[in-house]
Length: 267
Ligand SMILES: NC(=O)c1ccc[n+]([C@@H]2O[C@H](COP(=O)([O-])OP(=O)(O)OC[C@H]3O[C@@H](n4cnc5c(N)ncnc54)[C@H](O)[C@@H]3O)[C@@H](O)[C@H]2O)c1
Image (cartoon, helix red, strand yellow):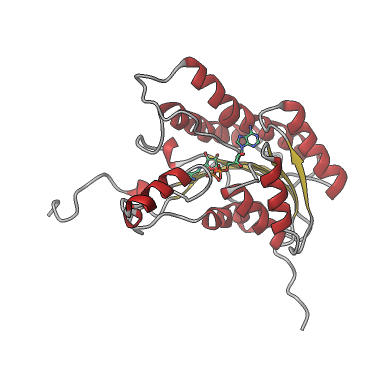
């Protein structure tokens, strides 16, 4: 029996933050569906592991280690995709950090500088350079990882939440300004997902025996998996999302759909 054609055959993609969590799961999903991927992370060891995991996939994965907030590196990611894979049709600006968990009473200006540089400026740089290539070469799709923290307080420290809200705004501006040029730009807003970023929360809960409580605030009553976010990135990479543009797509089990309430006390 012949194998079904790959869903993303012919697609060339760049993914940042690909050594772990959502970025790694997305690289594996893209390559597994036939997309040729340039994977980036500043963690070279983790990035090599991602490439190893993708070794049996339908399509090739190239790695470029380095800082996704450095403009020269971002240019290199686009250039590598073009040189090694023949183009760039999907860019996933996903690298992000939380860094300090301090409240607004204690955050320092330097905390904001360091975090905004990665989460916002790095995201902007990939939007800019991917879009420059795409407008010249028949269009494409760009996705950026924001967060439910962009939409409501309570899902991260203030500088992190503000950086993610700014990504949603950036996506709207970029989708608008790139109008008529065949480039779609969307944000993905994950809820609580077990990844490198949230591992301490999960490990602490396991150690205390309270793991079952994680994710209980959302209607699905569980935390999400990186693969469940990667599926949405996969959707945005392909033609299935051809009329989806300028949106913040929430992947949070329904967490942000309701106001806080005490079950049984409303009626
Ligand atoms: N895990 C969650 O619950 C959750 C929820 C909402 C949003 N997010 C967002 O998802 C994205 C992916 O995070 P994750 O949850 O998979 O965490 P993760 O820590 O597992 O992965 C993030 C990756 O980004 C890399 N990275 C950080 N700074 C970088 C830089 N300057 N250059 C290159 N790579 C860099 C890290 O090395 C890491 O491999 C982030 O933008 C994060 O803010 C995560």
